[in-house]
Amino acid sequence: MTSIRLSDGIVKDEILVVGLAVKAAKAAKSTSSLQIESGDIALDTKALLQTLADLGATGKADEVIKVPGTATRLIVFTGLGKQSATYDNEVLRRAAGAASRALSGNTSATFSLPAKNENAVQAIAEGAGLGNYLFDQFRGSTKSAQKAPLKTITVHTSLAAKSSAKDAAKVAEVISTYTYLVRDLINTPPSHLTPESFCTAISAAVKKAGGAAAGLKVTVMTDSQLRSKGYGGIIGVGQGSVNPPRLLNISYTPKGVKAKKKYAYIGKGITFDTGGLALKPALGMEAMKSDMSGAAAVCAATIAIALLKAPVAIDTWAPLAENMVSDTATRPSDVITIYGGKTVEVLNPDAEGRLVLADALVKAQESKDLDGIVDVATLTGAQVVALGTRTSAVMTNNPEFSAAFVELTKKTGEAFWPMPLPVELRASLDSPVADLANIGERMGGMLVAGLFLKEFVADELPWLHLDIAGPAYNEGAPHGYTPVGGTGIALRSLVQLALEER
Ligand code: BES
Ligand code: MN
Ligand code: ZN
Image (cartoon, rainbow, N blue to C red; front, side, top):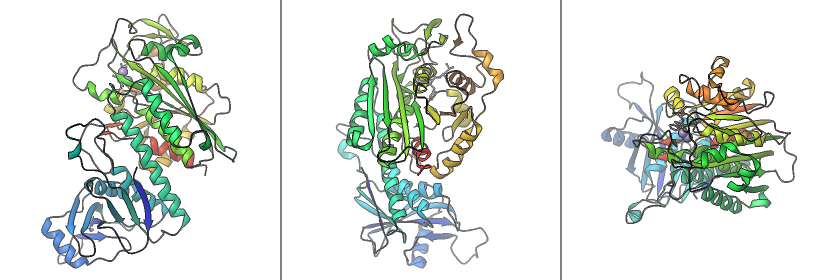
């Protein structure tokens, strides 16, 4: 865990992180094209700008330049891009993250970036926290060569003494800690992360967060319970694996206050997706260890929400299974019965996420006082084709709920884009033998998957379906506060949805 604190005093750390921006084009020739943005800290800008010019600094996003300092051992310049009087919070979050990522191997650093208000302080603290991540659990002989992340992050701000700023730092610390949990779970190889061990890890995290004293309760349904109670989706997907499926539930009830709202969160928890008998090609299949990103996000978000004492009740469900190939695996044309009675013809065992989610969606709706239901899933390759790896999709039966969610993602810096659920595509999911087929029209596959899930949600219950297939797992280079591997996407917005009721 990284500890995050605020300060408005003199910098005691050996490392000072400040911003570097690109001045507007029409700046006079004689002056530098760069602008140092060091918040409330005064620096010898003239000398530093000369040094930066000599080093070829550009001030662009994701550029981090370390310069020997006088008052501190190092001054680190992190790119803010175009100079602005009011930097976007996500610009600050990314700049802080790029810097903390570049500072592994050091103990502590003070971040002094332009922070106009508490939200900006939170963004800087969050970015610094989120970038400060290392996954070395599975290293042996190369472990000692890994540089440890910073132990302490200090955000320098004149607001440091305000309780609103302290709250912002606390939120950032919790967000960082539980994003690490999501990333750890995603990065853990399927040899070590099974439906059962996922439950063990979450139970341990809930206990560490205070368990019942924090308003949290965990229950796990085993495969035999799932079979006898009729969870045909989870059983059908998991039956090809020696690692039996589970249905994990976390409930959070706020302590001492009446919940202002109650949401159900549901996350796809496929600990590995081979495609089943519709076996995926070997090239790239390793990324399918990330197919439990939705489950990890909803579980970790629920714990974070409890620690932040949001006055909202959350009922979280993670249907967990391993989609494998074996003589017990579900065959194309098998018919399964989803919890509650709807039958599904499994035409493609690689469209497994919607099957486990259907069971969990139906189960979650047994709670009759829900104000909304949100599912999160690495559901379709079509999502990645449509929106790429940095933007997630949101689909809904309730445009107001979706619009409010998209609006709050502007605070969290997670990109979500609304996608339609066109009624014309629904007929493609008709089956000649069962109530529904698990695949339909290939074109618009993300929307077809959303329409499948919609069949399991009551029309009058506000529902969001978040397809995070692209953004959940970073197979490219690290950037901003995002490392390689599991990103932890959706956690911040799930937490913010609850914090909106504060
Ligand atoms: N887990 C995959 C979706 C996925 C693809 C996630 C790429 C992340 C990156 C999902 O289970 C899947 O295989 N979907 C199929 C559905 C198809 C058979 C209708 C797909 O998208 O190809
Ligand atoms: Mn699949
Ligand atoms: Zn999958």
